[in-house]
Image (cartoon, rainbow, N blue to C red; front, side, top):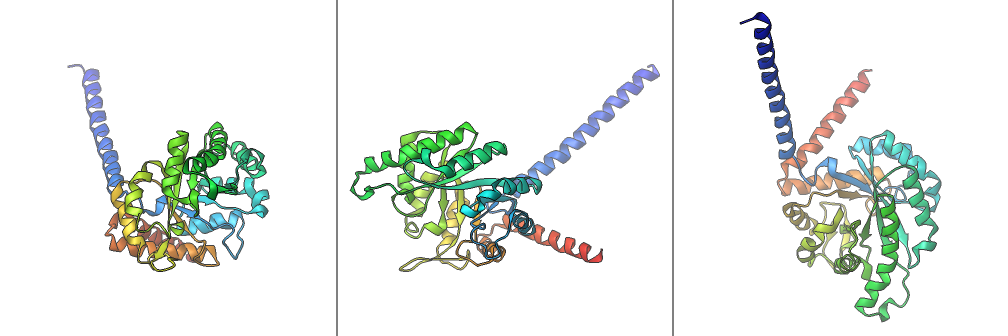
Length: 324
């Protein structure tokens, strides 16, 4: 056998062995990733209600830094009129810090075509080339209590259709956001989705607006799950009235979270501050700590591991920084 032929065959064999080794390593990594996936993992959390609900009134840069310190890589943007001039800076800062803009809040009425806020939001998302979700609440519809169920569906469907069509033009989705009233009932939101039949329309479900839903949750959750864009957690203390408390301090959220855990839902999990603490970082931290307590009870070791890894990494970074 000629030397060149032998060399070629040896090189080919070595390449095959190396390829098999690399494939094995990659497969192992993929298997580890799948094995440690959990819907309640730190990487799946979305910070919500931290812009107007923050006594420190952090700006875009300070807010991004806070999220990085907490290990949160997604933000749903709640805003007020005074924040409009910061919209571009907010998005640009999130991009620089590798934080995803999970959603943009919108409250609109029966005539969204005349709503200047909708145009501002659509313009900034298009300008910044961001494809995200618009978490939308529709209100101010007159004489709702005098309408039949079908008339209520049609009255809400008209503005929702307009908003969803405009969002679709720039590659965005619209989430029907439960916030009490007729519009906030999951069964009514399902009726709207069925009536409109739009591909970019879904549901954002909030535990902190679920005071009247606790007993019905096991029944309707499987029905809304296929349309669920995000599930936002809170603690719920049963009583009359039901109280919203930090996660882990209620007596209803654990059972509701177990239903979610067992359902196969893999979408984002919102972690909120709204009624938790004046300082957004304190509020988020309280809910993250309470969430971990619930995860211990649910025996979700995969999710708990992600919080411990972040905590360990933060401590190491702090030690390294102090040495420098």
